[in-house]
Length: 446
Image 1 (cartoon, rainbow, N blue to C red):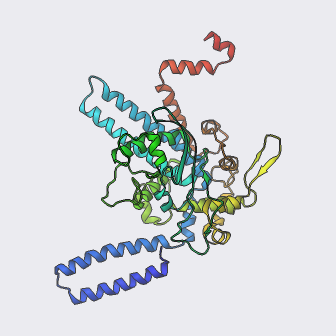
Image 2 (image 1 turned 30 degrees about the vertical axis):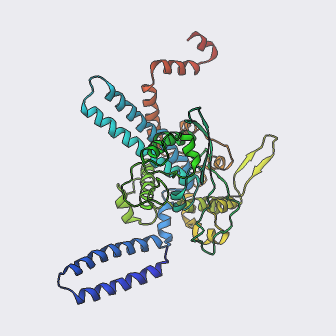
Image 3 (image 1 turned 90 degrees about the vertical axis):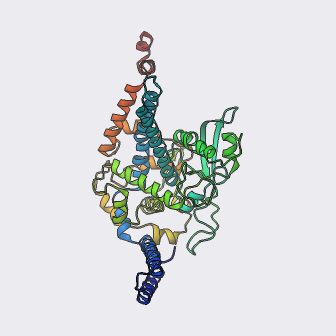
């Protein structure tokens, strides 16, 4: 990315060239029309690059006023796994059952196809959002990540090579690209050699469904592995992108087999973030992503996750990082600044000067009651669990607890979706679950 001054200079030179060429031709010729078309495209690209390269404190504040890392981890991602994805899955199952009946019409088949498409798109959005939240690398690293090489999946498989469940996930790529490293960034980041994806952030159950329902069908459809290759073999090959594009819409060849182009991946992240913020009840946001980009052309980029990580762990938690009690009773502590260092792969100067910003926004948010979801310290206990390896969070129990600081719109959506799921359960499953929820004496009678 060029600095803003260089982009402004290029734009000025291009504008002068435009006036010279139009002055020479100015006759409506084919050469003039071709130049005008090329200039319009170049002008838009330079304007977009200038907007993206501005290090605007005000625009970062716009982001932090609406979402923080704890809210992304404790509100938006659980909403996806507890409300959004179950809703799409239930709609797909219902539509497919209706399409399989003997009296099904052509409309039922179309509705089933539409429901499958909506479910797959929702699951892909979750995979992009959960991946970039669990591992705050730059977008190019996530785009280039390959399963079995940069993204490692420890899973259980059956005899036919089909996925049963995921035990753990980790990545081995660094937070920056070796070909474009600034002087303030860590060039030999040995601490980040293996980054464990916290199961408290990325749900392994839904990650397994992403592999089975999105990744593996796309691998087979696109012909990215040899015929006869099992899913287990494809995962271990190390040649297929983790964030795979099921339906490529461009003739351009992506840098990694099956990967999204960078713009498509950016759009997926931005759509997922806007949808999550709207689910939180943020009524001061535009209704569409196009309107949001015009208003904030910079803050909806996936690289802003690095700001969220650094601002929370370095700027807010600092030396008072996560704690936990060990089995023998001793207390184990971690430093928040060290977490930010490892997560972003940057040195202290970069974190202090470029990533840790808008502390005034945090100070203003601290005026809320401590049990309010906008308070910076509202989710310290949950955020501590995301750091310790193997720690999981029962989000269903957390969200059922009325004392848990949750946006009202999300709590209402969760309760409604939970009630729908219980009503849609088969009668035998519902009776078995209700029987096991009774005391032992009443259970035997039931």
